[in-house]
Length: 299
Image: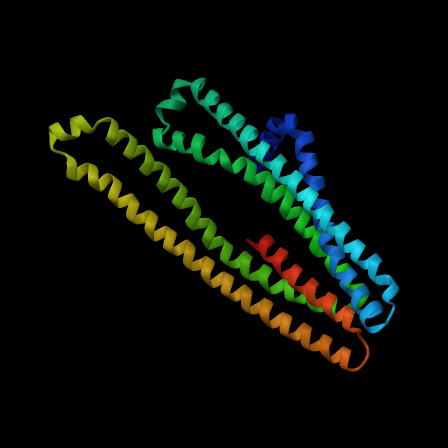
């Protein structure tokens, strides 16, 4: 299994070498946008503690200027990222589909004879879209979100080490829940893909031979060939949605409980003058941002 995964990654990398520069631009855009998001709460701390409570109103123009800079940087690089990724969706995916079609055209007869027609159609039309998702979700957003979460924990540790430890502890339970329940989702999803490919293949063959089916009065036979796997697909879809529902609710409960505990502890520190209002507001922003990115990673 591991060697197969390594072979898939190697194939994707070899095929995508021509797009290295474009992928690098997208990566830079993501990193800069994430960095700007992490810096925003720190600017809020300066605004609250030094201007509103400290009375240093001469710093207000500088803080507003920093907000404008961060907003402009985020907007510009998000725009560049959207443009680059649209280009990749149009060209990279098309090249993948062409490559898959070429592989099938020049495949050996023994391979084609045992290949389901619908499965080949699904590979070319549907699975090709997953190449770009592998790069976008796993190599870009997953890794960058993990780096961002680590950076947030480090920044919170500088503000208050105890709260950062709470964040780390709160991150362990969702990981365990996701890993445990993800096995069921993977099992159902794998079977769903197999059944879907078989059903599409049978549907294609039935439509292609519909005249013979009518002549032989085999409509019921053809109907059952499609209806039985369709029922199985509906059942598998319900199972996947059920697992996803309970996982999302459990994670939401864990995140909510962790947020209440962290906010309560932070409020206690503020009441005892061990934490400033600005830092308290920054911690609220960081906790919300961490939950958002961490939940994205878990999905």
